[in-house]
Length: 261
Image (cartoon, rainbow, N blue to C red; front, side, top):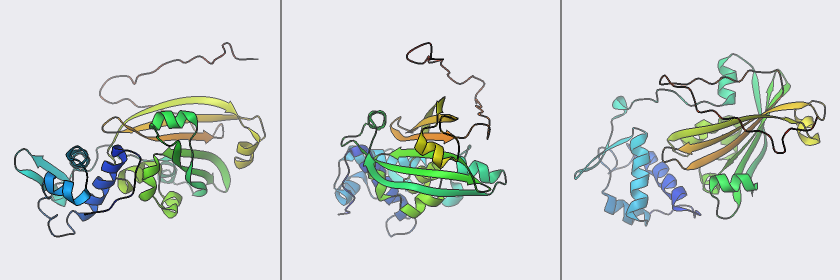
């Protein structure tokens, strides 16, 4: 029987199993051309068939396997695997692609109490989440801070060194084994409080652009709650819609309205 980390939900468990299976494909006997049957995998991982089917669906969506009804789950040869049409990238990937000398500092990493909004969004059972807080500098000038929360079970797949060097999308897709789906973004402006002002080397009360992102996996389950806090004037915010339609937009007035001043 394969032992996995204790997790607060079956959702996190099938992510773990998918990640573990992806590491065995093509490397271990019995995982080269065809995976063991669902019943055998249930015995190996000591989980229900529903959990195994969720894990296999993640592998199928990632292009690693194909499932044939009544015959089983077969490994897709590496040469036949199609890369994603639109690679998922993070802030550091974007800046580096533009030729900027980016330094990423890890400010905090580990299991921490989750703010109420994060706990609700990620449907956390014990109100703890994996926090990754980083600061980005260009030419030694602080330009942004990110706060990213994940379900606590993801801690088993992400090391402190991983958090220092990889973007959040890369951690979710390459380390945790997720197939990403819908993303919801909100953009706001706040005043820099003392701690944030010090981190961004700006005056207290200065405007800070805030971009909040909730990322879901391909099953629609929220797996990331991310906040980007950026100095004003360093970038423009751009949205591109695919498929000939405009992205869904909404105008959310501040509460109370009108804002003071």
